[in-house]
Image (cartoon, rainbow, N blue to C red; front, side, top):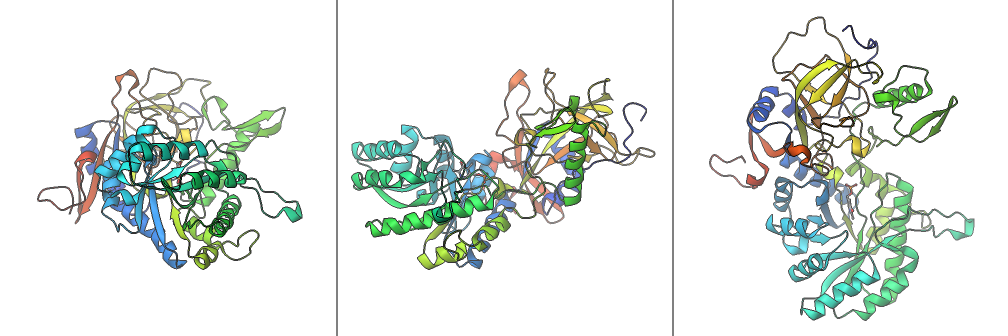
Length: 504
Ligand SMILES: *Cc1c(COP(=O)(O)O)cnc(C)c1O
């Protein structure tokens, strides 16, 4: 290698790869042919896997004998293939959560009947009108929004709308012990303590809205916070029944998480060494000593590591199972049992977890050169045909290695692991794909591909832009067909079999 520090012990963060994503990566010839035809960057989706993930969530419902629906939080990915594929699953079990007028139109156009659609997020009058006109349920954020929706219903003689009241800021009911667990504050939802005012508003608008339940979405991995919120919703529902309302649904939102890194040991080693690097007891592991939230103040470690917990012992459906098995904080019985006893329906809105293992982002290696002094720990700069907006893992604090897909076989005799910096295609000093040194099994060559696995949740198109007129990634859907792969553009995908079409 010559340049840069030697890489005695590469600190890998190898991705968790399950079928069919793993077998897709085993076919570099196919992936190279796609990028040759469609350019770099390129997003590749596996729509059958999203249906399988929905089924895994459903099996947790069955295990706990619960009814209700799994709603895909559309915002995690713009793709048509995912939404169309899910539209073709059991209508009673799988729905879609839309957070904009565009997503609502997209879901209806993909084949979701309005009864399977839940409108959440910040809403415009047009979004509310279309949801009400079509007959989708509305997850209401505040008394004011409820009033606005009711006014629209009356003014335009729309059918009565099913609504859920979204709550936030849950306080522990266990006031006797003085222990108060406060869930994080949120821009969305109404404080749980203000439920009675909300119910007054529902009462006033009974002609226009029908209260079907309560909802929350906590952007955390903390189980205790979620257990508290779920129990509080059960209690609020009970109070509602006493008041003559008949809500039947508890919607626990998303946030079930994804395990990105396969190996717990790699993750622990990496974060330990990152801490050591910040303290200066080992060479840097990042561009210009970036600390991901940690800093060294006179030899003392300060701050907090602002990273997604990339190795997760339980995530997705497993996390839901754990939550439902947990005892309710003050009522004691498992939360799943509590729901079952009350015959309440469970709604979930997984985004990231539902697109787990559902796709990857490909980038061509455009240039490889020795890194200048003082840049960091990577011996080389590897310039890619994409930018940080095209693969926004870093934006979400997700650290995981890309997979090197060589253009040609062999020719790597004598080469070993290397530490590199991945830089993007923008004319900006700061366009780094990740600020950490990435360890690869060998130095990439121009024309090789790097595959960023498991990017379908927020990392694929959420932050993509067309700055500098660099190409926005095309998106294709791929399906296994016997021993090979078939593909089509995302917008051409429909979940039916057509002669010569993509779906087998
Ligand atoms: C973003 C969002 C979700 C999905 O969250 P994930 O962490 O991707 O599972 C679900 N519900 C609401 C209301 C959201 O805003």
